[in-house]
Length: 231
Image 1 (tube, helix red, strand yellow):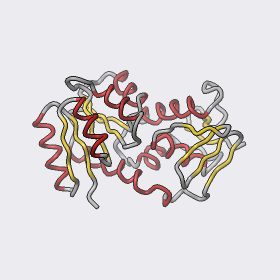
Image 2 (cartoon, one colour):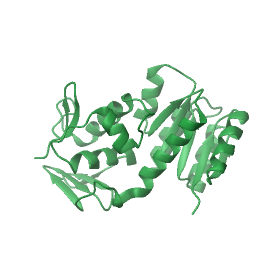
Image 3 (cartoon, helix red, strand yellow):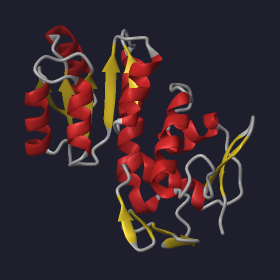
Image 4 (tube, one colour):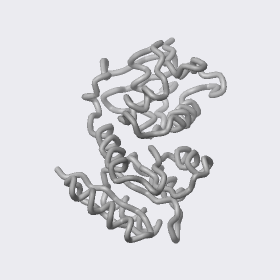
């Protein structure tokens, strides 16, 4: 089955280039040129992945990302011409899975697209899914149902947050560097920014920890990386 990708950018030449290369790889491509149209198409067409520009008319990419993330778990890869770190972090905080800065190479873009789609479709067959569930203290991670509960209450995690938690929780006490997590969880061997990992960890802690500043589950090993502390 062909996978659908929604490309959102107000610059038609960019959309045309991205569309041409995606179609060469066998993807079905949907187009949107403003934020409102992007939201409507995403909700109506349910694409497998969304390439979302930040600077859009009617509704900017951040607002689109926030709106869609509240309704769907589809991977969102934000496209931005801005270099300011605050913009990149904001996109991740709002639920984007990753970002890529313009101008970008077609090779890099295709690598990101494939990596994000690969994470979505492996689901329960992932190489590190060793059990149906993981129980640690008040935290319950259901591998098969992609569901996390704390004190019996279901937590709203993005797909990327769940993948990160699952990866660490299935290998408790093992420390992983940011670079290793980019490769194992995001699927990037070369492309990618380790800050993406830090922001996702911070978002995850805010959802699963009683005290995010003194984490009980996702623990930092200073100068090395992160590990899951199973109670």
